[in-house]
Image 1 (spheres, rainbow, N blue to C red):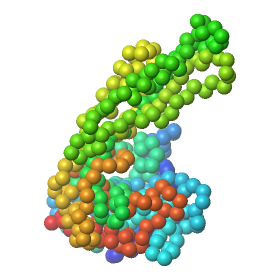
Image 2 (image 1 turned 90 degrees about the vertical axis):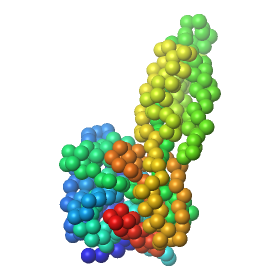
Image 3 (image 1 turned 45 degrees about the horizontal axis):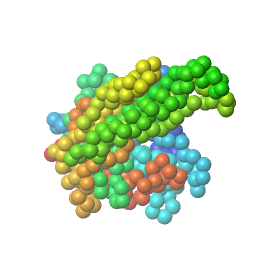
Image 4 (image 1 turned 60 degrees about the vertical axis):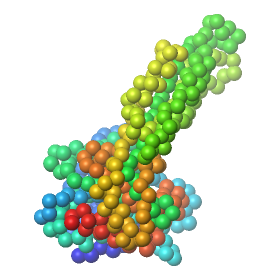
Length: 375
């Protein structure tokens, strides 16, 4: 049975799935996988406010010893206002397929299903690890799927995540790692009072400013062979004081740290806490680690992916760790993981679109990856 990746991508796009995704879009994927011999399990995980989330695990067992995993997400970001058409009414205009999720990442999922359809079942075991919450909090998404996999004794030997990693042309970049991410909130308490009587109050703003200045002076590292330097960015300052003659009772700030593999998230939170408490011992610090930095050193997996890309495109891809986070930050705990997918120029934008030719080429690349993985 063959699968047309364009047709399947259109069907997936036509099922609206703003994060967290549930229901119809999973029906479409299940209907495509079941005739190919996959055993499909769907789970509802989590509770409000970050759930419930629907996840899907599909496995087709083969006779060969290798197990290849493909990971992705069916949820999409909200379309926004200003599309030239309906974001969830897929439309081919010229050589482009338009629709929310065409690039990120329903197109990649469709291409992989098409590749799996062309791969003999006896070649080896194939699994699809598909979440409905990658674009959102990701609390009950891939991490919950990993728990289901562990309970069933399912552990791939290698995983490709279908994120849109290509930059200018399909195949020009593969992600072999990602920086970690941590968000930190700083709350400095004070005592409210009249500005004319500052001795009766305690202004938290100067203390917060001193804390932020001390943090701003920190140089985390200079980068290394595979990672750019880690960076600290302030993302919000809030006082919420509507009066001109009142010293506020508190002042808050938020910062985000993107860090390479020289650091751990918990250590960075502790560092910020030390800086803050040296200036204001009563400051409250809350850190939320979205993911740790990871690196899959160039080796067998990246080489077979590069070979498959070059066979179809004549491009030797760059191996990179740039960009934001993805669910590979969780999956790398299972086995070697790399990310490879479509060009990312229109992801999250109005009129998101993929070339029809790229969908077919990506399916051929994924097919080549499977052939080499099972060789």
